[in-house]
Every structure is written in C-alpha cells, then in structure tokens.
Length: 195
Length: 195
DNA sequence: GAGTATTGTGAGCACTCACTTACTTTAAAA
DNA sequence: TTTTAAAGTAAGTGAGTGCTCACAATACTC
Image (cartoon, rainbow over all chains, first blue to last red):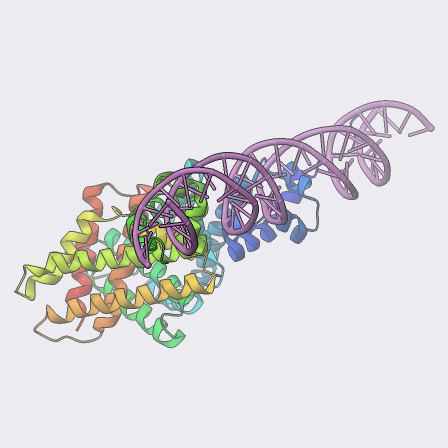
C-alpha cells in the first residue's frame, strides 16, 4: 500500500548549507530562487516542496547560521577548563575571523527587510540568545567586581563592536592589522570596565 | 533664441528630502521608482531627468542624509563654548534621538548592496568622515591623558555602539529607558578609557 | 507673436523573478 | 506485478519594476 517514504527532511538537511552559503554571499534580494536551485542542483519547484516560499528558506538559513556560530563557540571553549581565559580566547577568535561567514551580511540584509514580522522576530530571537551567550562568557571569566557598567550593557557594547568591525571589513575602512588591534583594545576596555 | 531656462538644479534640491525620506522608510529595493514619483508628485521619467538612474537617486540620498546629520551636530554644539561638556552633550543627544531619521536603515540597506562599488565608496567616505568627527569631539573634550585605548579606536567603538543601538530599536530588544541607559554607560566607559 | 527648449503626460517595453502546473519517471510496499 | 505517492522535468504565468519614447503643453527669449 505505502509507496516510497518521503525523504523531504533529509533533503532539507542536505541542501540547507548551500542555501545558507548563497544567502550569505548574495543577501536576500539578489539570491533568486533560480540561483538557489542551480547551486543546489535541483529544479526550482523541488525547493518549493522543501519550504513553502523563499522567506521560509531565508528564515531556515538565519536559524542555521546562528546555530553554527553557537556551536563554533562551544568548540572553541570546549578545551579551555580555565574560565579566566575564555573571554580573551573569544575576543581573539572574533578579532581574527571577523566577516568570514557572511554572518553580518545576512543580518544587514534581514534588517533592510525588517518590515516583515517573521524575519524581525527571528532576528530578534537570535540577538537575544547571542547577547545571553556573551553575558555568560563575560560573567564566568571574572573574579573582582566593579561598578558603573553592567555586564549586560558591556555585552551589547561587544556586539556593537562586532557589528562595526564587520562594516569596517566590508568597506575596507581599516587594514586587517589595525582592525584586529582596534577590536582587541575596545573589547578589553569594555570587559575590564564591566562588573 | 534662448527658451526657458532649466530649473533642474532647483527641482533636484526640492525633491531630495522626499527621496531621502522614502529610502529611509523603505530601504533601497522596496523603494520603487513609481513610489518615488508618486511621493514627489511627478511622473517617473521626470525623476530620470534629474538623476541618471535609481542608484544615483540613492547615492544622492546617502550624501544628503550624512550632510544633515553633520549639520545637526554642528547646531547642537554651536551654543556650547565649553569643550568639556561637548562629548557628553552629543552622547545624550544620540542616546535620545537614536533611529529617528532612518539613518541606519539606509546604511543597512546600502550594506546589503555592497557589491556595487559606487555605493561602497560613498558609504566608505561617509563612515570615514563620521569617524573623524567623533575623534575630534572626543579629543577636544579632554584634559588628562590616559593610555591603552586610542581615541581613534574608542571612536570606532562609539560608532559600533550607535549601530547596535539602532538594531536594538529596530528589533525592540530593549525598552527605550534601558537602551538609553545602556548607550550612556557604554559610551562613558569608552570615552573615559580613551586617551 | 515666432521659435525653442523645457516641462508634463501616458503608455508601454524589456526583463526579472517568485511561484505554479501538467506531466513523466521512479521506487518502495503489498 | 500492481499500486501509489514521491521525485524529477519542462514550460509557463503573472505581477512587478527600472527605464524609455512619442507627443502635447508651456513659458521664456528675441
């Protein structure tokens, strides 16, 4: 009675990285469904069997990109039992790998698209989680307490720093060396002052 | 012999604010030339007599928006002879008026469009000037010198802060009160540490 | 008033692109 | 082998959109 079982989930999983990569490279508008299909080596309407519309593909990509980044952080910190050096390690890593995965290109694209509530919500959720992670890392890597600048505020500051740092890369406003230097010293200042 | 003189320059000047407003509200892609024409209360092809293409309209808007903001700063600082309070005044102003003029929406839109060299250059020019202004303001409002964080780096930090602050507004990540608080304390920390 | 270039009108071209439809082929289950 | 739905193909639809064109009206100069 039952014919062949659906492999939709498997295929979704298989194609998602390609979809992510494409959106990261081209942004939302310039990523056409035709382009997507070509890169995935399927026909357009097959994509439409996996996701209801282009926006759903984009949302899936946003979620996946955030997941990957969170996992990346996990891996980086996995082999560091000492909580002291964690923040420094993350700062070093981010300073080094800024703008590599098109993370912020997707964010900028999404922000330019912000009037769509679903996109807005997805992005909002992502930033909140992101902020939470940063706060955790700052908090665990700390001993002496200070005042004035809360950890939460400092975390937003760091996220802002990461954002402008990506813009700096996109626009070649600073050379790589200067940018890393800038990132490190501003990040240090924020982390040091927080408490 | 000579027929009526051209008023192209005047009309460009007259319509530019409307063009700016539209791009700020809708971003680049969703701003259609039809929409632009409608808001300007002219026909599309008249816009095309004022600017060669849509991109030129966008570039004109970017420039004008930056000009306005620079002028705004000038006015705010004009009646403050005391250089000490200038940075604080600017911080207070920015914390208050964040996200009002669609400044950053235009930037995000433009960034999503970054593969276009002209847009890239225009944006790049704008950021450099912006950064220069911030550095000037930090420098003039300072007496005692400190180390570690250069004024230039701190200025990038402030611009990053302004950026994430706009994102926070767009996504309602914080309430207005919290956001202003956050902005003020991070900005203070950066300015205090710089030198 | 004559001549001229500007300003305004309205239609529409050429093209892109998200999404669909009608159909054939395939393969798993019974 | 037969049945049944999934997987794949190819073509197309319709809405949007940047941009143009042919032409009429206007108002300035001489």
